Length: 491
Ligand code: AMP
Ligand code: MG
Image (cartoon, rainbow, N blue to C red; front, side, top):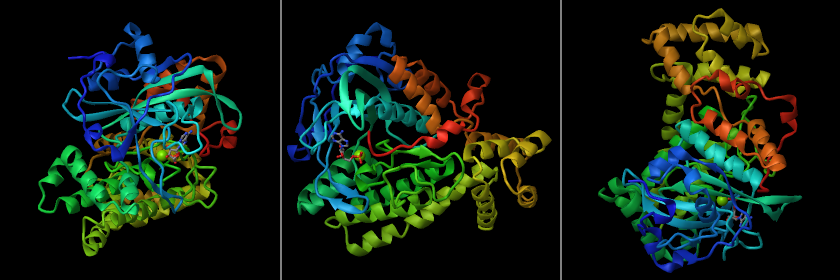
């Protein structure tokens, strides 16, 4: 059964909680909302009628916040968090509104949020809006990550209103991303009530999470401990998947950490072009707190914050014991990712040396991360691909020595070359959302109100492991002008 968005049957979950978790807030209307992008594949997963042409105006009205959904309350939730290591007692949905709770076609819980639909009681001094450029980036990256097999919030649509100005460093225009997740619950939701001393509310929220989103953990002998262990395991797996594709989140504050282990709040993120373990994608991150190689450590730090907020629910020793599982869980998940990237049947302890040697070579030459792995996937016995590999590294002799060791390692593996190639091509994407690709779509949309490049790029990124000659322009090295691009917290 496919519903029109305005006929979506409500299923109250978060909105059924007591009101200390949120405020009812109406969206602030946009003047001339236009549907710039619509995610047909996600729409049908959600049980929504998927042809936007039939009711495009209705969609633009609803997904801009101009028209509320019948039967669904509109609300902003309260949370806090550690921003760049500092506890900020109150944050909250400053520019996000929950506009619908429902079940998807598989009966899974779903929340629909508008990001940029106007101020809320949690906006502090900000305007509650989001600009077009950051909204395009969030729309594209959510779906790119999903297609890469990385847990993430999803993006259903992108609304643009060229008539509503938004002031950042210059005048820009308003946009709204409608995003979807089972829940947008963050570490920061628990921190808020913990630091308020409202331990009953921490427990109530944990019970709510167990009931609706962690059914297996709810059945465990110690549900809160099972919940905490699962959050740790999922976070470890998430960060391992980021490291594998060279993704940097940019603002790993605890308020941007999903309890479900989803990639959440796309701001100044970036996929590394040339490999640099110390790469910092966020221009505003002056100390490099959230550099690529710091991400696992920061995730653990953030889990300590969540552990603190869970202290009314669990003994201190249980919390610390659970946190000890992060590092091994991360290493196992990362090893599995790297085994896939290298085409190994399974990761062995001695493979860390092989990987470390390789990363040193890539670091020295600033070798393009995505291109290197894709080329390696093709390299098994083809000289052309091997020559292309050599072009990507600075020290050909050192690389040849590494490659020799790698081939020896493969020789001890049970996989055939054909099997290995298949695994590698499914582990090493040909396409990721490089900054300059997003930038091309942004410039076209800003200058010409032409959204076709967003759609073309989204089409390509929906199948990142399949080379398609139509999209060969997306697979190459970034152009020189991309070197001057920078992204910051301004969005
Ligand atoms: P971030 O680190 O960008 O995810 O946001 C940190 C906090 O600032 C969150 O509480 C956001 O809701 C809030 N925020 C960011 N930008 C805006 C904005 N333009 N208007 C209102 N609140 C905002
Ligand atoms: Mg945030």
